[in-house]
Image 1 (cartoon, rainbow, N blue to C red):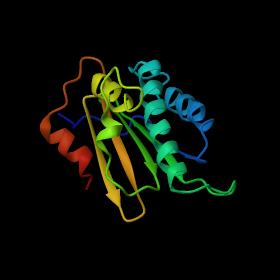
Image 2: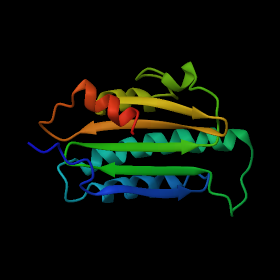
Image 3: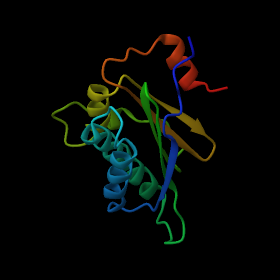
Length: 155
């Protein structure tokens, strides 16, 4: 039996400026990426929106960005088993407790929403920023621990 396909649609990447209005672009990009695949475009767009909002806030907290700099990146990989959504920003600081607020908090609900819609999420850090990764399995698909480990640490 052949291993499940991991590249049904391959990755797509969208660079964004650090402005609140780009969140709409991230939503549309993510929803379009899953079009024709067994995923709810609304759910994927919601996750992209939450992550992009956090990335814009992180980037703009560092300093103002000129119009010719695009410090935020949204990457979507769609397979027949899962969607891997990754949003990067230039702030290398670890996620704060404030970003992980409860449902009644005025700020920080984004990661709570992600917990509700994603199988797994995790941040990765570099000297020049961070990326928050989100995995959403296809309907009826149960990803194994080995699959999740491979997604987290690709060869």
